[in-house]
Image (cartoon, rainbow, N blue to C red):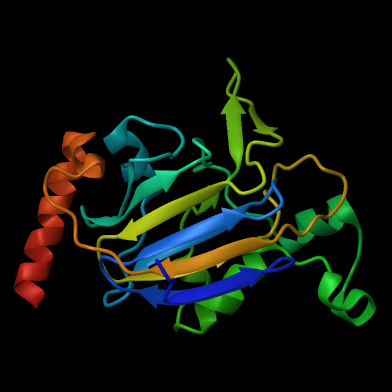
Length: 238
């Protein structure tokens, strides 16, 4: 199927767009070792956004994989994971900021390094959020696709290197018109002492609306109830 949109994000790339209900977003790790940090908002009512606690507790999970869903803070579904060759995506570790990147990798600004300068996840998010009238007050815990973080018996979190291999991909189907905001900065717990810029291919594809027996809805009763809330929302609005 020919994508509606296809582009590659190089370096610490960033991107945002509204993707309508039923369409799919496919992310592909070109070289391996990528990280895609993402925030999601209801495109029409942006006070509704991705909710990490409800996503995890409602599905009895700590990390994401197919066919689980991404819940909003209003009891609805923003998206479902319909395809996934990785099997583990971080949900709890947030994103990097300027102070962390400076302390870990040293100073590197645009004036000296041009497009290879050291960007950070927080600033990249803020740049994209500003395009949509959003800002610091609209931050919520973000997703980190392609990255794996595990906890030991004391609760200490550790980053697992090489979780995502060359050519791995994940595909999201949007269950509501969704503002997607993302960047490809390194995961904040990545122990690599080198500031690496891994390219990610981004494709938007057409799709069909799911049926009630969709794998993403039947895996947990909470998902099915949230999908029913989506159906009521759309039937009243359109």
